[in-house]
Structure formats: structure tokens, C-alpha cells
Length: 260
Image (cartoon, rainbow, N blue to C red; front, side, top):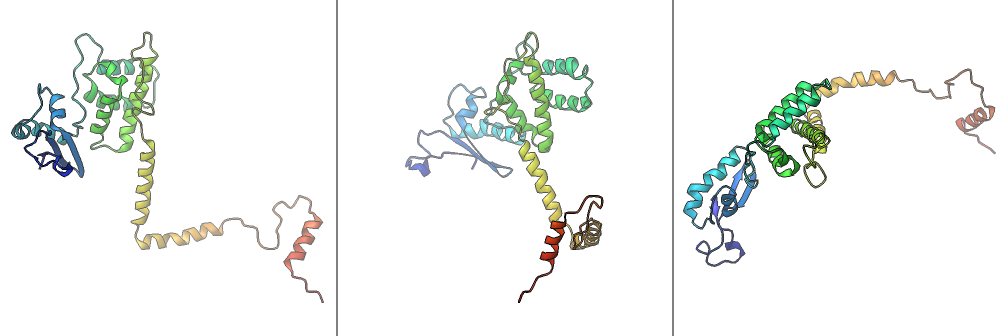
């Protein structure tokens, strides 16, 4: 059931004919999504709370499911385009590429251009001040994650972070602050490293027994080539003087002495 009330398990005897709000409760791609219908509807233009289950199912449930299918987080309100004459994110990113990436002749200029294209497709119509808060960037991160590796998402966020830092130090500044901090947007490189490590471990486990056995002679040959000192104390540097006390100590410890 996608639209229901959650008050009955809490002891409400009048559910579902009570005055408690309706909730969306949906499973999508292995994740459970719960949200009040009122909260979703008011953020998208509703002028009054949704008290009818029929209205919730006919009007708002298709929109809720549509945002989930599109890879968006329904808890994040939809974006509003920038007013006319105000600098947009798309124009800001174009300035960053024209005034910094190209003059610096960066080797990764084409890669940066590709990430900027993805950023402009999602955030381009917003006013540039929207980049000062984490909300829109978190929405981009959640949307862009579908169909892309963690490393690709991290690189796109890294390009956006560099552009924001560039904009903060222009004269006059185009941005006053950055959302990339401990309590804002984070680039989780640890997850990328852990993912790569887990994939490598899984690849090793999936190897056939014959492949592992075929590597043993090569490992044995490489070990035999190592220059290990043989027993008896072969001198590594023959030109160095020999300490007679160390040799006497080796002779005394090499052969056990029996007294009596």
C-alpha cells in the first residue's frame, strides 16, 4: 500500500478515519521511502493539507513515484529557475571554464568539460547563490549516482568544489561561502577506496584453483632469486674489517659445548 496512515501501530483506534496525516510508504530498488503526503504536496504547489486518500492516490502518488523513478529524492523540494538578469549556475560554470581551465592549459581540461556538462544539465538553471547551500548539490549527488560509479560522482563533485573556490576569490566575489565542509557536502573518497579494495578481494576469491596453482612455480622461482645470507655468516661486504669477537661469539653459539 503506497498511501496509508501510520498511527494505528501507535495506538490510534480511529485509524484510518482519524485526523492523522496520510503517508507515502513505498519500496523502490530495495529502499523504503516514507514521507508525509502534506509535506510532499505543499512543497510542490498545494495550498492546503491533503486530507483525502483519494486525492493523495490520484494526484500526488503518481508524482511521488515519478520522482523516485527519475532518481530524485522526494524529500528535496524541486528547484526554481533563477530570475531574469541574475547569474545562473550554467553561466558561472562557463566563466570558470573560460577564465581558468582553458588559460591554465590543464591536462584534464576535456574531463573537466564533461563533468561541467553534467553539472549544468542538473543545476544550470538555478541562481549561482544556490551553490552556497548543500541542498541542491546533495540532490545532484543522489541523482547523478544512478548509473555512475562512485569515483565518477566524486570527480564531478571535485570539479564543482574547485569552481566554487575559484568563484569565492574573484573580484568581486561571485560566491561568499562553500557547502563543501564537515557538516555540508562531503566527497567520500573512503567509500571509493573501500569499493576498489572489495572488488579486488572478490576478484581474488573468484579465481579458479588452477590459476592459483599455476602461480606457485613463479613465486618459488622469485623467492629462490632472493639473495639471502647462507648459514655460517657469509660476509656481505668482504672489504670491511672483521670483528674477531663477533666471530668467536658465532663459533661459540654455533656448536654447543659440552663440559664435564
